[in-house]
Length: 311
Image 1 (cartoon, rainbow, N blue to C red):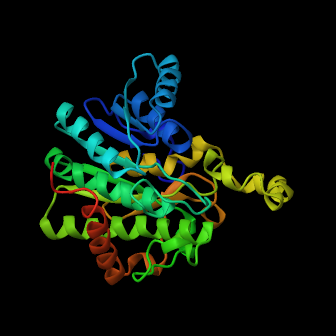
Image 2 (image 1 turned 180 degrees about the horizontal axis):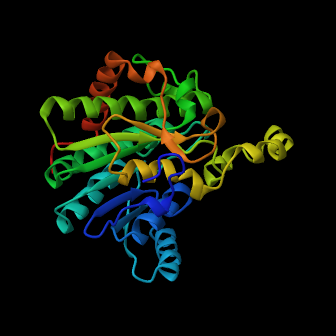
């Protein structure tokens, strides 16, 4: 496989593989479902809206008539929905080769999930943490499976706060401060999970990826702002399409050369665009004490709302 210009042409046969993509109805998730199903995998397209998920599935099947795509409802902002999704998945499948934790929201105004968690962190980190925990035994039993968490360059602006991890009552909240924390959390979670796999001798890996500056509907909360409209013509040359932005997470999911604890992103200037390569995350993302604190805090917050060991 080419390392310098890796594309979907480098995806190996995925026949017999079961892959789950959260937020698979649009943007990076849609492009991931499209590429992975085209390579022969059975893909579970998890979407908050079943209708939008089915529209995405039908669009891909029109292009690839043999694609095997199952739409399942999942609302990561509702932990009871996460539990119900996991129960439904485990009633039908006894393997999971790739869990791609792709869904997310970006730079939103302050609001709470159904469980009372600040939404960006609640959806981007806590919801995916709960989903991963529910499916972890099946992932481990599959053998050679992967968990792929989607982060962002914005993790470099993230700062953890164990005293007030969720901006209680909106104190200190800004859309980017929250988003950066959620993306840093994605990396802390990935690396801590890989350390656990290494310690236990588990035949599974946890990896992370980011899309650079990709043109998806994630920017819907900023694309109407005057400053964005003013500078958007200048930003277009340093951004890339959703299909290019999805390549890092697709490579992380399927390239046989990928190792646990690695991070993939675009090769270009400032990792904003380009073909997917192994990249580095910042020092804060490798802070083991911060990762342990986040894991413990996340378990406690999630378990106080739903029992994560009940399945």
